[in-house]
Image (cartoon, rainbow, N blue to C red; front, side, top):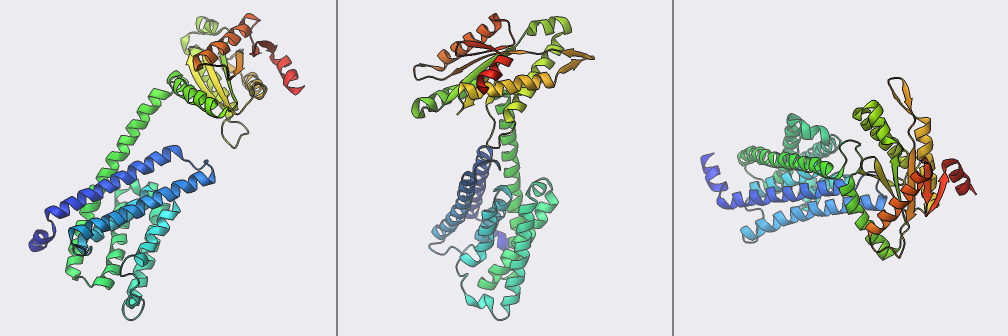
Length: 403
């Protein structure tokens, strides 16, 4: 054991371990970044692109490890076989757990047939054939189980350890067929592999916690704590991006601003806690209606602008189309009233609606215009909608867009 450690745990080996941990870090960062941007609801080609990127990252990581060993060992990448194999096995197994697609699983299962001297036919005949196919079948079952239970395994240390050990034993059995390593050294290599994976697991856990902390900060920075909808800071960012899109592509964008009629009366009569409940009720039902009957995503994005004022941004909708959604929001509020201590609260909304125009010089100009329309609704008796300067009751609004 002492001679093995002296011969194989050199400074070069430590450098390779650091490189491998670095690759694991990159894979994790890419996986979590793509996870934020792509979901199961994303279009097929977007999800396919994510799978291809993740698979390419895994292949590049394996090739990079091979190149590092080839360079270190003057053209012979299997000189430090125990370290090279452990590094490759660790990256491949980690990729199955952290990269969320079947293509990575298939690539991992193809590795035993792709690396040199994988095409050596001796492994498929004679005394080694049974060992090779037995090891490969066990590897296939282990990989499929690890992929199918990845969330559970990332939490359960003992399942993670068992799966990684079986996976490594299968790989070492296949490598032994090709290179006939000393079985004693394989046992020692397995011990170092377990240590290797402990280091990687600690790294992955720390990265996962860091991402969780970052996500919490992102939620606090971009979402309103009371209602749970996006806040004014998020609106400022989104509105600038949308205005830029409109300037470049001339997409149809409609902006609606609304507030709760006589909101101060709720606070004065029932207290601020009930006022907060009214805000949550309105925000929840509005978001629900924006999500209704639309498989392509929400009809619009809701933001809390401040106090009892909210803004909805509609992409690819005209003012008339936005007005139909707003009518449905008002209907939902009427059909699902808020009851406080047995008393029914009559919650109504005033809206201002405008579309982004070529003449708009800034988002500030758009918001000032829609704010003016909102106050036009309030000044005309509340519980009304003003579209580009024309004020309607909700009943008249329905007649207008049905005409």
